[in-house]
Image 1 (cartoon, rainbow, N blue to C red):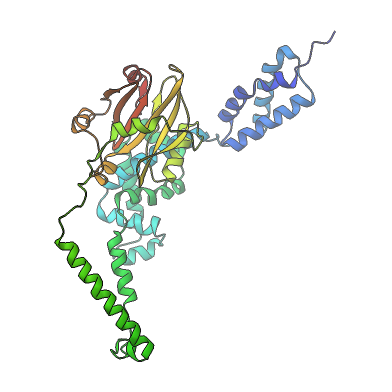
Image 2 (cartoon, one colour; image 1 turned 30 degrees about the vertical axis):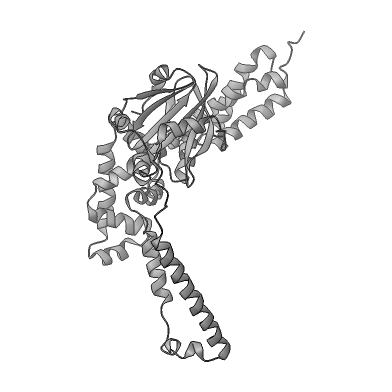
Length: 390
């Protein structure tokens, strides 16, 4: 009697572990999916014995992977993701360590995409200066990273990928032009009028135009009179509102947050946030699973990203707000963090804990980013579950 064959449901029960195995054997998610698809086509066409289904699937996956092998070892997608995550965090600091001339070379060639020969003429230097600048950048990265991190960066990313991160890294060091300068230049460009346009009689040539000018003069006189009268009245302008407390504001909003961007992989969330202008590290929290991102309107004109985790220890949602020192400085008149809290988190891996009714809050920092976790669970226990990047 032939042993029973594995059913499609039984075969699909092994999909998760089989896909993870495929990722170890391929260079990206698409290649892993193709490999798994080939194995399942074979399994569904000619099902293996039910008792041997798992071993059979693994064996066929390894067989198909060997058939698809190339001379080069595949670069794991996770390796690239980790390398890109590291690079996005440390590249601004590495650029700050360079000389001004090296930064100029990189900006002209990698951001403005000028040929090295053109940049050399502008800088009155030899074209080899570009290669010296790139070598200096790698030296700065090596100084900033641990040997293991640098090895991951070196073997996980190509030169072209590293070059593509430079514009974003420089944008963190170089500020955009202020709005007042843009307005001033627009006014300058719009103020070029000819001599004929400036003739005093040109606007009063037609009787209807003269009547319109007279009406405007009367209205202007009335407006000036009203403003003068307003100036004699007691000042009733409202007293400026006190800045909001960042921690209390975070607690107030926590209950209304919901997933707006479903993301379950930290590297994927970091890339998504980077595209929105937020260069942050998603914290590693034991027994908590990232489920997505939300946006918290802490001020009418300011929303900050919030990482939403499923906390398996409490069965509740854990909200981790993402702030930064630069943001606190920019909005210092409208939202503040108590100086005692700032002193408490001066050193990395130091936490500040608050209890506000049913909610508990844990505050910490990593580099220039400030994390505010709001939970209905035990914040003191949460502190022990947070791992810092090496």
